[in-house]
Length: 397
Ligand code: XIL
Image (cartoon, rainbow, N blue to C red):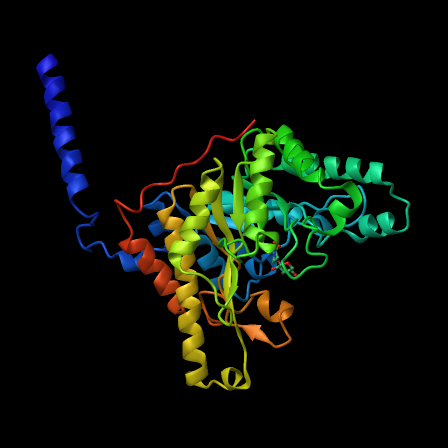
């Protein structure tokens, strides 16, 4: 009897070793990594490849391809707009959860993790809130209570269903903002002072002990403007360090990754160094909103390939730089693109002088662009010793 048990174990062990030594294959078809989704390839490294989701597109019965790609190509989703305050509470005290609930359900059905976006931001606030503060009918004290209630209500509703929350978004000014010494910008700091950041993380943690709590911002892909006074990345680093030192439950720093081919941008080692430096604080990192836009010159708009090709190539290279850096740093938990098709990208609406576009990894007809292929090849060729599985922090109390 005993002998038989041991035999079984031995047979299983041999089979396991054999499985590890072969590339996964089905009887009829050999394993072809290029046929895998970005999401599936990401999981080889423990990395979630995600996308922001536009709910109108997801619900458009006339465009089934959007839904098909959103569910098959990615292992994480972010609400592009429907978890923002103006959508969730358009009238004071009346919550509109329908679209956000729907995304969370969609993710569950497709076994995707959810990045919650966003709890505290100065944009896309409901008019009742900003108008009330402006006309004095909402006092500062009441505003603080309103913020506490908002965070508590939203985090509580999705408790246990959100992997990473963007708790505070874009609180830090840019080098070109004036005065250059004011580093906390916008509505919240003006009305509540910079302490709202620590408060927000504490309120979020009280509502969900398990979600990873992130600070999220743009233009923090690398250090080194040279001048510490206007190095935004350095400011965010110092801020994060300060929050950790005070025991604030911040678990991660999200780097949005909105790049443009007309700018200098960074090489992989610069971005890797930044992610490593943040990890040194004990926080996770993530790319949360990656897109790489280009100026839509007259030539681009009329289909001149001499103007289009270099843009597509530069865009692919920038997507790839962020991906390689993320792969190289074990704290980098996810790589999320801000929409996957030019058909629905926010870029043409927001950057119109001069007009910009071509910012995503699929064209308007869902044809994968070079950027998609480069991301895929980065995920395929990565491996030990330089690329190792992710290390997820335990949520901070
Ligand atoms: C953008 C959306 O993509 C647009 O649809 C919306 O009109 C404005 O907001 N940084 C963020 C995101 O954190 O929430 C923004 O999303 C893009 C910039």
